[in-house]
Image 1 (tube, rainbow, N blue to C red):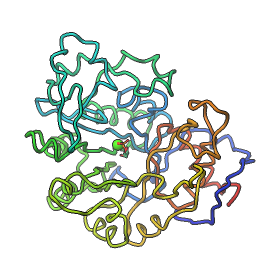
Image 2: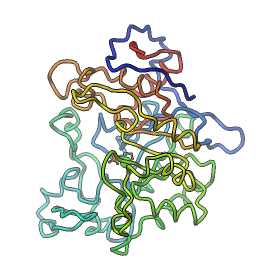
Image 3: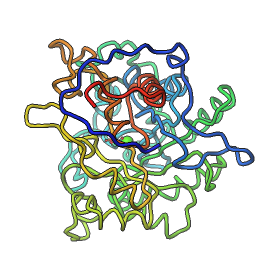
Amino acid sequence: MRTSSRLTAGVTALALAVPLSLALPSSGLARTGGGGGVDAGDELLVIGHRGASGYRPEHTLASYELAARMGADYIEPDVVSTSDGVLVARHENEISGTTDVADRPEFADRRTTKLIDGMPLEGWFTEDFTLAELQTLRAVERLPQVREENTLYDGLYQVPTLDEVLELRDRLSEELDREIGVYVETKHPTYFDGIGLSLEEPLLADLDEAGLDRRRSPVFVQSFETTNLIELAEDGVRVPLVQLLSAGGAPYDLVAAGDPRSYADLTTPEGLAEIAEYAAGIGPEKGQVIPRLADGTLGEPTSLVDDAHAVDLLVHPYTFRNENTFLPTDLREGAAPDDYGRAIEEQLVFWAAGIDGMFTDNPDTGVVTRALFLDGAEPAAA
Ligand code: G3P
Ligand code: CA
């Protein structure tokens, strides 16, 4: 569904009676008759960003499972490589922020500084650990100041392999009687190519082994870089690809190749037409869809959704979160950064702007706002 409505900056409180059915998890995916998969673009998608990372340490099986149980259509593993070429789920290859590695004396000598995408970075890196070593570590909450409750789970969960995530997806799809999709992001593909640990080959092997390499498989593959997606498309990969975009900077593969194009160039109608040659969708920062004004309040939608739809690209912006610190200033409640604000209103404005799905740390909230939107709710100030 792609509706557009005139949105104003001042979004006031919603006064909605929420039918009981809307409070329950429900899928936004259309069921298919024979293939058992989904067609990209059939329905509005709720994508569990790093799982249900608003409630559990990100990129753990517990986070992905909770996301699925909350009604997410897709769970989102970011993947990097171990030294022995196994894909594991981490947001970045430097793991001091999301594991207890800094407290492990046996790995103290692995601390080092590397150039990652042209920037010096100090810490511990997945590519310096075998899978067996990495799995002795335990995940911790990335944002303990904002998500203190999640620290309850620090130390409980391993870093999962992509294989384990795909097995979980399969088990939960069976149990919940609906297809749970995976929305895999390759992290730092140029960097990993450069150290002989290319991500794409093991990714395709893992998808193939799980029977998830078909056109109708419930899979998206996403990247902030362009070259790896183009090569996947040229190699005949059948699952849909998504070009991630950013409000600033440039894809690192283009920087490394001396190509002057930036994300801003990719976001023009001409850039989007080029993306449409290899991808099924774009994943912009949400501020590229509706920017904030100088005072931090929500502004007016850009033409990005219409421009992308004009060349048949899906639009799945990131990242929707419930806490005040991540919300427009006019949708915050109280002064505490970690308190929840009026995230439901923010999301209704974005659904009304015509997005096709959203990455959210709080999949339960995304499921509710999608249901409200599909039931005709509009932002109060629209
Ligand atoms: O992949 C969509 C979104 O997750 C991109 O941002 O940095 O959270 O991976 P990031
Ligand atoms: Ca991601």
